[in-house]
Amino acid sequence: MTTLPVIPTSPDQPDAVPTRRRPAMPPRHLADLDLAGRQAAVTTLGEPAFRAKQLSTHYFGRLVRDVDLMTDLPAASRERLSGDLLPTLLTGVRELACDDGATRKTLWRLHDGALVESVLMGYPDRVTACISSQAGCGMACPFCATGQQGLTRNLSVAEIVDQAVYLAGVAASGAVTGSPPRLSRVVFMGMGEPLANYPRVIDAVRRLTAPAPEGLGLSQRHITVSTVGLVPAMRRLTAEELSVTLALSLHAPDDDLRDELVPVNQRWKVAEVLDAAFHYAAQTGRRISIEYALIRDVNDQPWRADLLGRLLHGKLAHVNLIPLNPTPGSKWDASPKPVEREFVRRLRDAGVATTVRDTRGREIDGACGQLAAGELTEASAGGAAGAEVAQ
Image 1 (cartoon, rainbow, N blue to C red):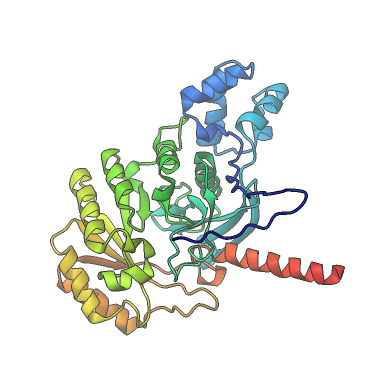
Image 2: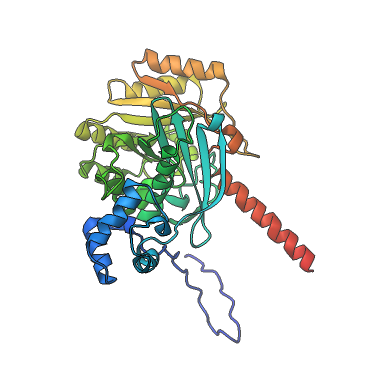
């Protein structure tokens, strides 16, 4: 028999039972709507339908996020439309740059105080945005800073898209040195498990890839959606008939270790997760990216490289090895370079295409969740100090 906890009551609230409040989603934004939805929204506000295309052209085509800068709209229209279709969703808390300006990380505060991060990475031939789909994460992977924060809430479609639009504007400004002035790729590898926020992530993908002015006009083939292995959602994604790249955060080829590193593996084991990934590849013709964070003395043994090679041999997949970006105070650390090279050699000898991810942003807390964790720590310390002074 399960013993339920005793809930204390007070004279003011006899027999009160606390209820869990759902996190409040942000106000509606034009990026939450398709073009037809935007037209309906502006006409409801008493504006002509063509205002929807004007707003969309500014936002998605010219990367203008502030309605006050849309000076071809009458001032009265700007005032009416700003609160209903262009509210401020993301407020910058901190922005850091490194790699001579080629890597830029932004910490955002949402309307309810939740924190999320996004990263812009410039290369000679492309600019990539790494965006978040949730505030925090519920997957509880022990080596991940975001996983240790827990899940606050899902992001709205517009909160997801607005990160990419902002970063596209940064790229267009020429601030990313040595790179083209145009955002070309988006990866859903920031905070959160994208497939745990499935409907909104799919809608966000459609906004990012719809031609301007309905969307940002990116190629579906330049969008990557990552997952720790939520098998039903992976199969649902296959049925969407999109051409995005699926990235599977595997991190261990055996169930014993993956149960520890990726707790969702206790529900869907390695064989089932890989089967869903291979099915996606077969249906879409898109090569699967197997994400594997190399952790010193944990998952970097030669026999694990050999096992991973056997699992992937002959499959439409490649391995993206990630030198772990350790978080402060963590017991987890990156594998030594000789160990990394041996792991790569064994996978390639097994016929598996393997790359090592370029390490970016260590000096700006580049790993997912580190800036948010630092901000929360500082806030807690400040709150404690304030309480101490008040006493």
